[in-house]
Length: 345
Image (cartoon, rainbow, N blue to C red):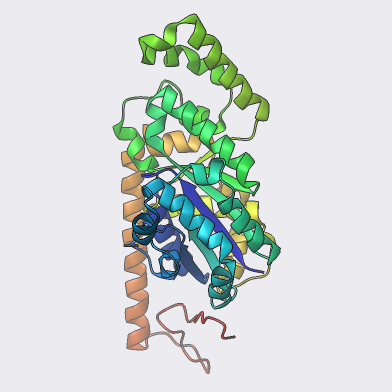
């Protein structure tokens, strides 16, 4: 049973960077992973692209042939893909049971009210794919109440439209300490609770928002969000291994991967780690890690990585010199000794 992530988000939220980082991270833990580019405007991917929609249709061709602008051409391209699902299905068959990352376009209308993207992944679900929608938002939105509430509404609409297991993520969280101080702790923003406390800060943001009319509207919007009670956020720094590990654990729980059979040789160890609930970060931990004591944590993790690299180097030198006595057993290889090969059809 193949698993996958549907990576959504507005332009600049870090979708391609996320796909690149997650692809590398999965390779490091021994999970066979492939990335599928579904953005017809993305002609220079920074990750190895196993399947590219531009092999089927390109944005330039649509704009020239049908006289459409960039946004209309992207919608047309996804409709074209929906009508040619055999191309996508055949390409995915070549990837076997690889874990798939689908890098989607940044036009938010594709996953807020347009049906093609939803229909495409509904077809894949019928083929047995277990998918999780991962919706990315730049953490800069936390610096302005209006941006924050707008991103919550966008995430809520995407959850209702796509109708999939859904994880909302605040990306680039390692930059949050460099912005102006937030009026509340980070866990307030990730839990999305008691939004009425944010209304005074929202009114201070702009004189136009201080009128009685906008006050009632803002209160109504926060009431709608809280009544649904669906949206909460995880945080992510792509270059931080512990942050990536935490997010992947959350995604695996949402999609059921943690309950499935091991796909890669390292997955047995990975699944044991996944069951360790204490490794999941709590709100207070995030505040301490990314805002209050970020520099101290960065330095501690840097020293930890240097120590691990030194130990690996010593182990490699020891094995090369033949200093370890393994009796009749051959000594282990300097690397993990694990080869993950793609299954051939």
